[in-house]
Image (tube, rainbow, N blue to C red; front, side):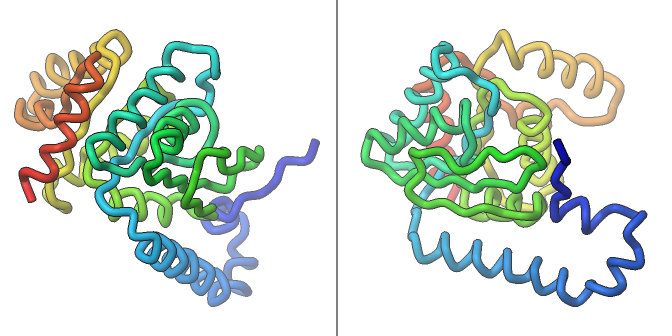
Length: 229
């Protein structure tokens, strides 16, 4: 099976320098169009206060994590939030499903990958992006906080991007909740007892992360975005 080349790979692959020179202006316009479409669509949708939910695309529908994702989506809607995910399957689908079934705003920001995933069926406002960086800007612009359920590299990438922007004060305050102490506890312990102990970060940086098994506590933490504003 032939592997599909993504827009990100076309943009970043150093072996394609001649192609880049020939198509540079077109690529810049394509990137610009992706930002314009994202801003226009989400502004016109008037999604209000939304919480970004991160989590694995590999979570199975019959798992406790999937059920937890549905419950989180429901609780966020009941607290007056919309739900914004990567639009894919697994945990993302679960959070969108909880929001959708509760009559709330359910946003999915999909991404072009070599293997197709597509937007899940529980998204009411959906966009597909070619470029990861454009998609990340939409997450950060239209989310008031972030909840991370267990996930893989994609979840870690999105989590630490958000955390870095808050820690460096490049953006305003975002509450961040890591849901699942068994899953996230070891990471946070390492941050505190290795990275922090070695002087690479401060205690207050680790304190930006709430680790909890209580969905109500996570949702209440998201309300901190309203209090801080």
